Length: 194
Image (cartoon, rainbow, N blue to C red; front, side):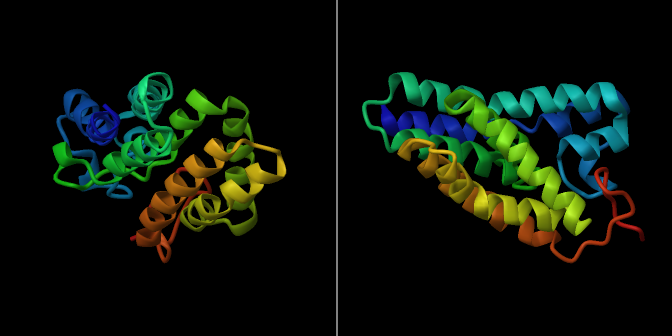
């Protein structure tokens, strides 16, 4: 049961809604322009705010559902952070999207909603503060992934939350290394200036 839930986490994360929705709305692959990622912000760039918000909701759900199922039904507690991290990994490297996906922030947020909703607000504040400070969203995302668990520790989060944010944060940090040197035109809806 626990292994099945973890596999479900990866498969859930692998549903490439940004690719499907942008293809449906615009007839293009969202990864062929902008940042090159199957993400909410790149969907907004390619297809507009409506499709982008829809992608955001689905991407949050990809992290929320497996984490909630693991929380309610797994016979082993270790499956909860593993299922959450695998849903993020599935979003970043989706089997249904040739392993070219998004960055994992929304999916991580969905996992937090399922287990520690207050953590979502804290995580967003950390990410936004770092983005404003560094003026580079990829570096802010990488650092957020690495410091989220220590920040939650300061807020008195449970061991389960700390494990979930530790393993998911490592996935996030690794994913954001690909954009460490990317140059951005905008602060939030960033894109390559070339």
